[in-house]
Length: 205
Image 1 (cartoon, rainbow, N blue to C red):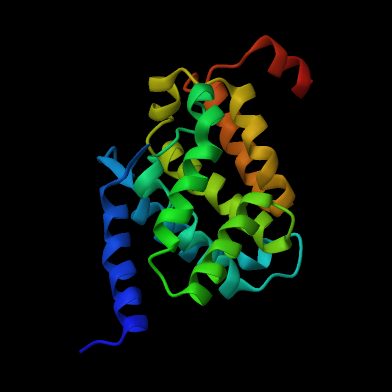
Image 2 (cartoon, rainbow, N blue to C red):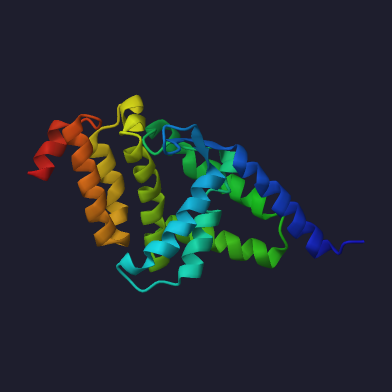
């Protein structure tokens, strides 16, 4: 007979397998299919480890990597919210809070508290680890989209102003990676794969 604690842990392990079924708007490199949340989280965690030297602040990289790995588990219940979907974003917190309670309640109470606190820390964006994890969350899809010629931006008619506003969180996590981001965005504006808006032009002059 498996003891109750281990049973709850294994139940959670199986439950989070469902994250592989949550597909995002971002496509895999090489103009592949839409990526899923689990792939996105794995990619972010590896990126965080490799790029940790570019954090603006000293960070606990193990904490950042775990933050990356769990940050989208709530989407198993809440669904993926596209970064530039204003209507979806207006209900995102309520949906994700309900999902967080349901999913993490599968775990033993101490681990529920631990992972809930880590998710909340990521969302609050107040610590060095949260800021760097958010930088990864922004940079990862940007690199994929750029590798595909900006096709996701074109498909959703995203403007440069929208992307620059989102990427401000990258700057707060890593000035160096923001410089890379800025160059990528400028290249895509020049190529016409990212629409420039009048207001954004004024901001960048």
